[in-house]
Amino acid sequence: MLIYFNKVECKLSIIDKVNMEAIEDFCRQVYYCDPYTSMHAEHVAELMAGLASQMCMSTEEINLAFIVGLIHDIGKLKIPGTILNKPGKLTDEEFKTMKKHAEYGACMLTGIAGAEAIVPIMRYHHERYDGKGYPEGILGKDIPLLSRMLAVCDSFDAMTTNRCYREPITLEECIEEIRRCSGSQFDPTICDLFIDFVRERFGFMMEVASC
Image (tube, rainbow, N blue to C red; front, side, top):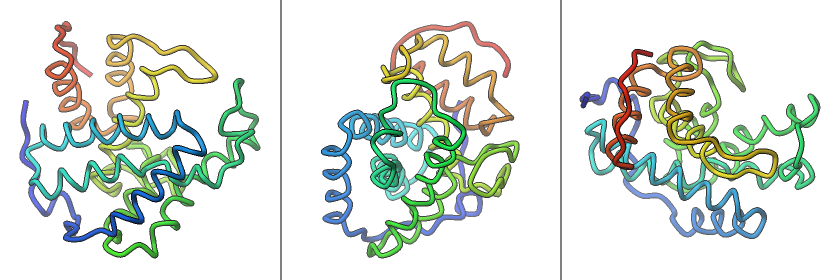
């Protein structure tokens, strides 16, 4: 299924020029701080570009989606390693600290030339479609389009890769979880498009179920 999203839907200014040296420097810092987060960011960037292509976005928008995926977790540079790499469940206070990474990342980009369009995407990528996310509890299409896309791509890679606190789940289990969260955590239209993209990319067949 392909859906064409026009400029009104996106509500994004396409980035003509981003200071890529600054972006690459952030990526290097993340790698030396936490190689897992760096690898995760590369995976999410590829997923974002693939999903943007599935949604028939322009080349510039696909490039923007890739860059957003690549740097979406740079705010974790400001999270203590004892929290970031904790093998067990975070305490309420630790989770409160961890949740600040989205705002930290947005603030880190405010001084980067050409990154103006990325800042709100970074800030709101942990908002939920039902308004129960953070940091501001905005909901539905008030959440930037690329933030809604990033929420799905980020969760998919987090669920299907090994983490210090849990084992990965299977591809099929992950897709079922995304379906279950369609309309609550995730934008339902983006869920459908993402599932189509994943099925095509990984070349497996699944029984089609309604969300």
